[in-house]
Every structure is written in C-alpha cells, then in structure tokens.
Image 1 (cartoon, helix red, strand yellow):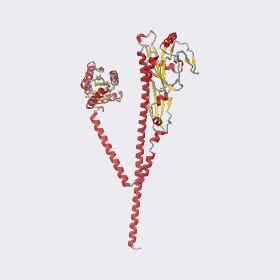
Image 2 (cartoon, helix red, strand yellow; image 1 turned 90 degrees about the horizontal axis):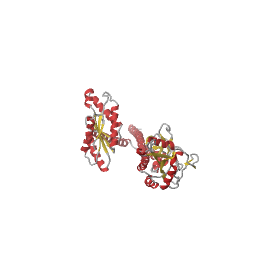
Image 3 (cartoon, one colour; image 1 turned 135 degrees about the vertical axis):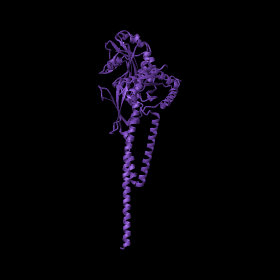
Image 4 (cartoon, rainbow, N blue to C red; image 1 turned 180 degrees about the horizontal axis):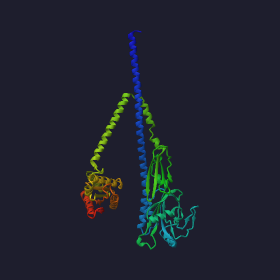
Length: 517
C-alpha cells in the first residue's frame, strides 16, 4: 500500500471515530436530558396530584360542613316556630315542617307531659286532629310495644313527619329508648341544640339525632320548674348525610372516615365510605364542629383517584421520545423553556412584590391607608347592592407617645407589630386589618352585624390589655365600633366610627364604644 493510501485510510478511520464519538455523545446527552426531564416532570406531577387531592378534600368537606350546619339551622327554625306559637296543631306542624324535610330525614315534636296530665293531654291531642293516639313504650330488647311505665314526667312523641314508610303511632314515650335520656337531659341542661352519637333510628338504620329544647317564657313558668315545654327532634340517616347530593364519581375518588372527636370516644369510627383507601402518602383531616359535637374527618385517596391522576403513560412517552432527541435540539428546547419559565416567574414575583408594597404597611405588614380607602369604597357599593351588613372597628393605642418617649421608637414599632399579630390571630380570614395612621388602625368586618362586631372589639380589647408587651409592658387600646347604615356615605361612616373611638378615649380609654346609629 502506498503512503498516500495509508494517509487516506487513516483520515477515514479518524472521521469514523469522531462520528461515533459524536453519536455516542448525542445519545448519552439525550439520555441524561431525558432523565432530568423525567425527574422534574415526576416531581411536578406529584405536586399536581397533591393539589388535586387537597382540592377534592376541600370540596367534599365544604359540602359535608354545609349539610351538617343546614341540619342545625333547620332544627333551629322549627324550634323558633314552637317558641313563637302558643299551641301548635298537627296540621300547623305538618304545614310548617314539610318544606324542610328531605330524603332520609324526620322531624318530630316531643312535649313534656306530667304523669297527672296524661289523660287530659290525650284528649287535647285528639281534639287537635292527632289520629291513632295511644300511650306506649318500645321494649329496647324486643322492639315491641309495651304499656307506659309510671314516672313523674313523660316525653311523648306527638307529631312526626318523615318520607319513608316506617309507621310510628303517636303517644310513644321516647325516654324508654336507649341513648335518648342522656341526650335530652344534656339539651335541657345547656338550653342548646345537641347532637347525638350515631343511634339506631326507627327504620333500623344508623342515624344522627339533633335535639333542640323549647322553653316557655320565664314569666309564665311556675315556681320550681325550668319551663321546658318539650323537644324538637330531627333525625337523619348518617350514610345519607355523608353521601346524598354528592356525585357518584366524587364518592368513588375519596375514602372518608368519620369519627367522634372527644376524650370518651377518641378515634371511634362512626362512618366509613364504601370506596376503599388505596396505598398512598396522600392524607388529610379536618375538624368539623356541629352544635355541641366535634367530628374528625379523615380523607385518603381511592384507587379510582390514583388511576385518574396517574402519570405512567406520560412518563413512558417522555422516555421514548426523549431518547430519540438530538443533543442540540433537546438542549435548546430545554434551555428556552427553562429560561422562559424563569423569566415569567421572575416577572410574576416582581409584580407581586410591587403590588404588596403598594397596598401594605412596610412596618406591620397589614394593609395601608390607601388600600383601606379603596377597599371601603368597594365594600360599601357591594353592601348597598346586595343588602349585606358591613361593620368597622377603629382603634388606636392609648398613650402611644409615652411609649415612644419612654422606651424609644424601636420599642414603639415592636408594639405595633406585636399588636397586629395578636389582632390577626383572633379575627376571621375575611376581616381586614389596616393601619390608617401612626398608631391608628381599622378592622373591616364584612357580613358582620353590630352585636357581633362589638363582641369582637371587646375580645380584642381584652386580648391586647391582658398580656404585657415585651419591653413596653401593659398596653391598652380604645375602640370605636360602627355598622354601616344604608345610603350612608363613606365619610359619614368613618366619622361615626372615629367619633365613637374618641368617645372611648375621652371616657377613660381601654374600652369599646358603639357609634350612634
């Protein structure tokens, strides 16, 4: 072989070696980029699934919270009906309660009858239109009717409205059934609506009992008597309360466990949804308070939820197509996407920072006066259009100048920051705290009536004055409370609250004054 041929062969071999090296580099780089994209994608998908799970939990809990609260509100409406009516006939009871009764619900009126008044009460019940009336009890063991036992007072089922086919004859003494006596005694003692543990309903299913005591006017009550007329009782099937009105696909996505949240029944499960929990780290719990009862709701995803939010197919596609991408194209697309995302994120962060600087007070972090005035104008328009209550609390720190003079302005600034932290911890998320001056603040309370707002102001006053502040010691505030009057201007509204606040200061400070309506 000649020298020229040897040189050409050497160049060809060198070219092939560099080509293979470049291909290997492209392949390895493509694999590396694909792996990186997969890691980022899986992490992002996990966060997305977690957000979807939390949204699903929040939506389900909101539905259940509304359902429980609606039961309490409906029972309170029926209770007020009996309080405001001297004598309710069966026709009047059915006419009033029928629109309130839903599926798997029942409402009943259980008056208190003394032993000596049994005969006269039965005659009166028949006269008022109650049919098929006979006194009896239910044997808790056999479930059969038995004659009424002799006791000083009886709790007789007089009126009952329900939508199922279970037949109950009026005249049953409900105290003879297990679990009723303690529940009704508690309602009688507290004068409040109480909620039972799951009890057996007349149709044999597990249900929740809501009991509201009805008391006579204390002026009409005989001596040595608490004036209890009876109880309004509503029952609802527990499974229906937890599932009715919720779409079937939503029921299949979550495993819901309901348990009593008290020292006696800590962790005792009273309801378990049909959808089984799937192995997953996703978990959430919420505390539900209904009347006097606390419930713990625990949520876990079902296999249906995990399948619907699975990213296996996406991961496979990314892996298949990622291996086939070239180094330059993959690198360019990746850089363009990441740089654009970073730029957009940076713009969003800067925009948010500028907005927060524009509407918040730099010292305390609460809203500033400019935002306060803009927000009040907007809330007044909404209150006027939708006929919603709107209240305002104006307050400032008593003798704040003395704090600055004695302890220094840094101490005064710390007092203001600590004051705002205390206020925020004791108010609703919808209540808006603004700093309107040096030591002057405003608390906007949407959807709040005068009585509720004045109680809140008194609560804040005690919260501030009860605990000493670091360095400054005891600090007090004077509060002025005003509730917006329809068609009242912004300036007039502020002026009334401001006048009330200065009235509190002139009356000795560390107090709450209501504005003149």
